[in-house]
Image 1 (cartoon, one colour):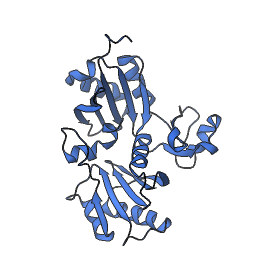
Image 2: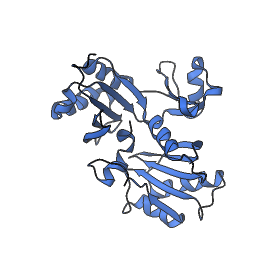
Image 3: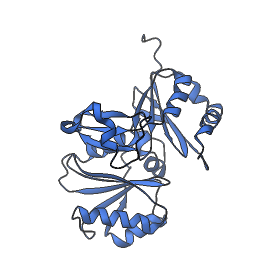
Image 4: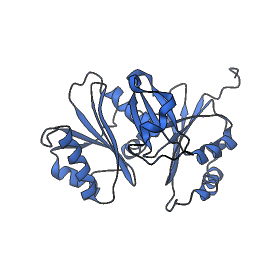
Length: 266
């Protein structure tokens, strides 16, 4: 691409079974310009994906523009992290079989977190990728947990205190425990009730010998202080807070910055 063809814009698209969000970035300033969230209330039948995505494209002109870079972020709980020292590309399925059902027909791939000497092994949404191939031709894609964990590890630099982060989505949440750019734990849980939610958090803390009186817990994702899930955590854990996004320089609200943390740091 010649310099005259460059748009100096990047498009990031975050897809899951119940939503399609996207963000347009100015690549010269590395600032997000446009943020749009589209929620699918009853996205259960994958055969409807083309229609759902097509309606989002029809309603958002930004998706039909030209971009220097396009990245598609897949969000699901069909992933795991493996240290580079234990990683073999020939055995991707074996890494996933302990926490998800893997079929012979599944397409499995991985992201490399070179800085942290580990890889994210995951099953992407192949039908979604096929939709974007028809729209854009070529693009990069990653798993959402690759971005989430790598960014939290970056932010933990020179902090020797172990800290727990919980990233909340509609039907599942991730627990990440980091200490000075070391990943102590990552796990994903499905939940329905506040009791489910706090059980998994307290159980994880217990397994890592983290005292609820002392551990610092910060929330990301679709959660705020009025949320029942936040309130039950606040009841059982002394140091609970929403992740501080005051340093993020953009025109979006604190709530949007927490809810779209992954997308905005892609």
